[in-house]
Length: 290
Length: 245
Image 1: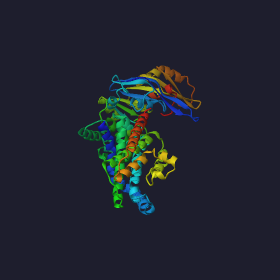
Image 2: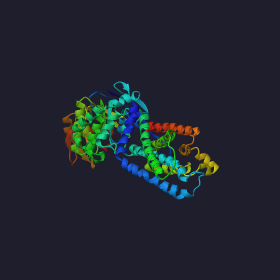
Image 3: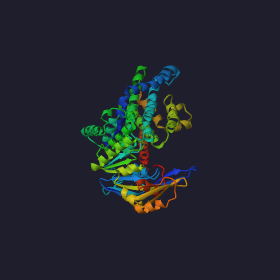
Image 4: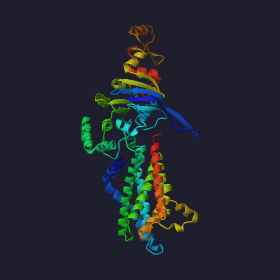
């Protein structure tokens, strides 16, 4: 469904001496995503996730490399491919001068939907996310959770085959977050391929069939969440040493138990199953942004 | 393409319809002040060689007002790009980039024309004499197109609201006073006159004044305005495409 081949994106900016400096945001990324899959792109802040999604959604052109949907190079079939995708941005980007219904209508018109279809789809989707009552309200009046749901609804208006979500639950409370997760799962069940970026590890664990981890623009690992954890070691031992929390990973439980027996730490020692957060920190060496 | 232009225009039409009363009322303030201050007040003591100064003034006010309204009506696109980020909705949509530029420009042209209509009514009430012909109307439309396109280009390339304001201060404001709006460019020193007569607003003032008094349209001025309109469209279109770099 999605093929990313050696994608590179460089940006130029001027330093304090007014010299042009090139920054590589995405550095040779290659990935493939299967139809109907929920695929998560993980990475700390500044890893290149948002730039990747901006290329995939044709908001910015790549410096090198290519992206294919269903075998077609997206920048050679741009208008056709744009009918194919739905985009949920990281920030709320509604038209502030339009109502909820008008925002959805604008999106539908931009995707060439007929009048009857527009009306039916707006009513159907707003009902689906319990927002029917705010159809004539200004978007400024909505709560954070309502805006997020509306962003998803807007992206689904034209029934896309691929849904891109950039940090879909950033800054939301846990209840709203779970509701958004349910919505994403329902989309995937209905056959939509979901490509999301997140720096919430539990979000990736809860939602994704497969994940890729990016760091400083490069792909550092890719696979099913469980598989990535097992690659690191099924069991994690954590303990305090010199005022820091230390971690070791083991393939077998008896090996972890033997290691714990030999530890001289006076602090809390914990043996548990390895999770995606351990993988993330081991691979990126950074905890910021988690 | 036409449907996409209509969609982009539709969005602005929805917003304008909602604010029409406020828009019309606010658009009356500046023309009334110009007509009172320069037409009735100062104008009584100004000799323009024949007719009244009010008759001389109305085409100038139309030119500068349609310039200001068309330019300023498109400024919200800057906020859509920089602050609300709602421009992204158009970038990811399967529409031709040119349709977005044309739709936004036409929406600003509509505002410029409504505003011009208000001035024509007010000028008639103030006792000015002028003739509105199809060509007179066409010149107004081209003037609105040029300045909406310049506004669009500025909204695409400038990054702060302050910089947008500077375009008003350093480009539009001097043109408002110098481009044959309140007085003939013949009164200017030769070098400055040569520069001023290269600007589009000067040609709009010339044409509106000539056509409004029942005269002929200067083909060279029409050509200059058309060249400006095409050039500014290409400039805005290019700036919109460059947002994706």
